[in-house]
Length: 286
Image (cartoon, rainbow, N blue to C red; front, side, top):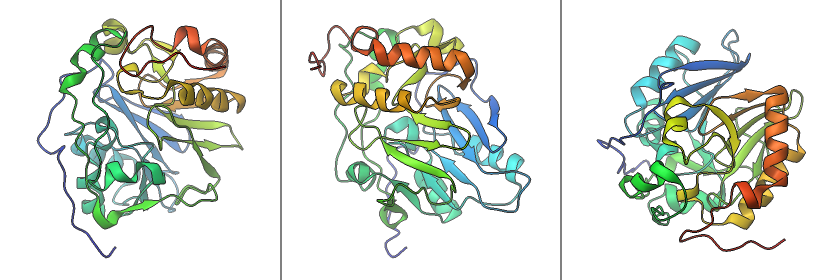
């Protein structure tokens, strides 16, 4: 890594949003462990009984580094990951990424269209507090949009769909929530790490955000800027018929509850996911 100069505007920030599951972890399948930090999930992918490497998917809220490091130590002992994979670069998925990349001295991989937001060149569009979307939307102006700068740590994902350090997994471009959003899928057991392409909690309900009541929903409304692309991404993921999923927000889901909810979301996306109004809302074409 030639250029290690980094900038971390997330350092010292704290976001006033949490849930009853903050700090809770869950083994989704034997080599996928999901940890909730406030209202967002990070995933630890790798066999804890093996001497092989493991990978961190997403890096939580600002201030989440200690929780992530503690969970990693409990699950993998002193073994550091071989890489960090980012589904996208929003503040709640990169909160600890600069600190962790430097501490572990590991590469961070992302889609090429996310690179401007991870190299300090571009800010995301401002969150839309006017969107139909409840309490979280109303406080969204508090959310940071400054880009982190990972310098030489950040790399583009391989064009052929491979995921470095995650044998058997493929990355899929699932834009809409952000231009370079990705999801990760493993065909042999139909495991899916969906990021914010869809979520398993109703983000426009303060009660459900705090209690994490499970429900398949579209991407978070206040930060989604391309609803037509978001719809096509949900349909792409539904066509995979995942058996188990970890999303960026909400509890892991599996089985009939997941398949039924995702099928309905894909079918009725325009009605149940797209807000009736908001800065980034245009009626999408069929």
